[in-house]
Length: 447
Image (tube, rainbow, N blue to C red; front, side):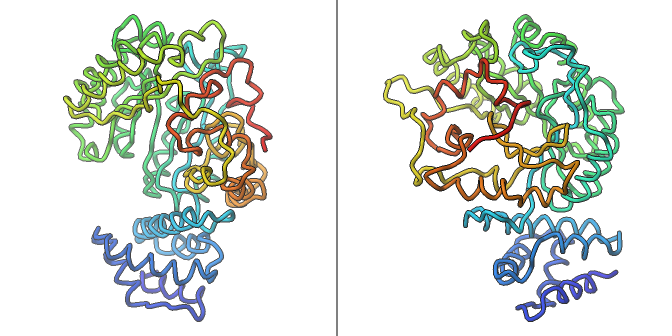
């Protein structure tokens, strides 16, 4: 099937629409030439004229028209679908639509809950048994989701609760992300990043690699990340960077670090910025530790605000000096006047990119809205298609109520939704002792 035949197929789907075949074909050629600017403009007009006027019932129709044709144009077809999906998603988010014609732009899939180390702050530490005895998602379930969602997807993230490099069908995942032009994002402890074949495989997928690394000093790192060895992991990272530099695909990869901020490692965080820069990292992301065990409560920087602010300020200055991107939480308010109460006002409950752009699928097939504690399970991909779940009654109701006076409880308690920098300081965002029933493994009813 030639590109023009595909576009004529669209025409049949859109009787009476304002459709300019010549303009659309020009857009397709521009995409082939990697000149996307005017293509985006034309395709945006197309969507506003047709999709938003309800002449297209769902982007899934485009999937069948485009991808069932000539495999030689699959690359162009998938890029086109992603552009269309992006613009529609942006418009639907702006309008606050509850039921969506677009599909997620980012999907996080928990391929396994198994993990090969035991971090002191991890929620898995309050569970009985070995980390390696937990469940994994079957390959056929992953493929079912991939075939449905990947044509529209920009980013696939492999993480949530386990170590993604333990996934037994990682080869197949790499094949699928390359087939559908999806960016593969992996959050890993890098312990298994110890052989060249695996590294080259990930580089070929143009991976975005985020390495969990919670200390600049050997002793601190080994204490926090029990089972991982500081020197061995650094060796793995350096080898990855070497092979990345040698590969033509390496320029499309990124490598960064995720640093969990706590009392044990906050004072050496500025030093870690130096280490990350020396390792050639592209970025550093951070998150405050969430406390699940009473014996670790003093690790929360909620009780060391002045120290945290001072160390984060030094780290920011160091990142500017070394030219590395650094994402840190806002400083703690030391005035005692922070607006930390629950946000109920409808005019504040406006923003949540997760509900329109992203979704999470856990290893048991449960679909959840985000990573916030207490978020509801909105469906299961064992029992239903993802597209049906994405527009299910529960998912739509969460979107609908977000901007109302009565959002779901998990949204009321979310500082991202609230949008006030001080709101994140509420104690329940830091301390989750005895809250497993509303935790990552126990996401259920809220609202």
